[in-house]
Amino acid sequence: MEDVLEVYQRPYDDARPLVCLDEASKQLVAETRKAIPVEPGKPKRMDAEYRRCGTASVFMLNAPLGGKRHVRVRERRTRTDFAEVVRELCDELYADVEKIVLVMDNLNTHSVASLYEAFEPAEALRLAEKLEIHHTPKHGSWLNMAEIELSILSRQCMNDCFESREQLAERTAPWERSRNDRQAGIDWRFTTVDARIKLKRLYPTI
Image 1 (tube, one colour):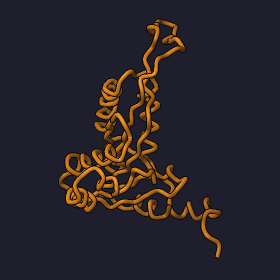
Image 2: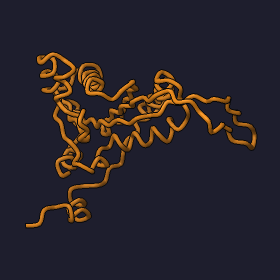
Image 3: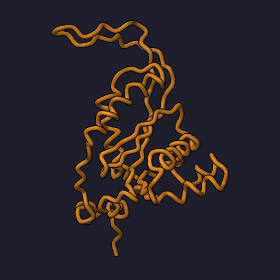
Image 4: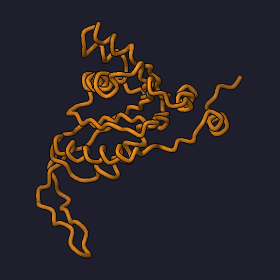
């Protein structure tokens, strides 16, 4: 826990940007009856019956100090999907930096092993060497700032029905652009000092 909190205290560094990664599933559903749109004095009305269309995995890459976030909607949440998102992070989004300080939770796919499963060893090593990885502790995923950004995305953009992954991606793209244009950040105030007081019960007793 203190490892992640220490990372959050570091000053902004163009050469070593902080990026928080998290992912969530979104149920894809289709309406069986057409909804009645919003009218003056009346909200949108939808039938409770729907048809399942599978799920999509939403990856959130959030750079809180830079006020940037990148949303990637994929069909699944496998090791290969994670590895492909990491490669885009390293080779496209932050191609010119020295190192990416990556904070993420302990999901079984969130590891360097996923890179080796998806790519040739030389390529996996190249990507791994560009990352400085910090994992949130077990049951401490709330320490990941990307989880906050995912919550905002869910409330503002994903609380509607989507029939396909493409439809969901079309909705999240303008949301991403708008927040990036405003450089919306996260006012993180929880520090190591706070942790040692408020979470004292979690520390070992000598």
